[in-house]
Length: 141
Image (cartoon, rainbow, N blue to C red; front, side, top):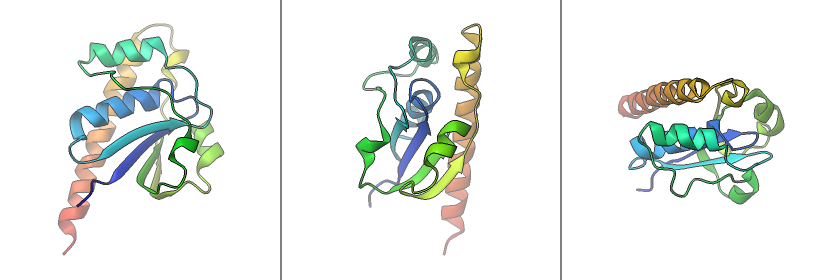
């Protein structure tokens, strides 16, 4: 049986969604096909990449991608991480389940602490998502 596809979406795919991708791949990559994308992708934010490394996660293979790279692929779960991306892409997004988690942009913070806070909050929310995912699956006959 193939693993369900999980994608994290943000506008630039430069910080929040890359952080979420790294967290989910590290913790749940054996259970989900994990990706991230942006509606207007930019270069990865160096401070986001450093925060990922500080938390002991790999940045290997992380890069900003356009949603267009996933055209034709239906995702099982799409998690939108900012209100702008929600406005831009929630209609017609090829996903069976769409969730919106509006996380503040750590790039607006004055220090690296904003990135560490985002890493922690994303990690906790992703763990909760997987816990609920597991519960839903175990409740099915």
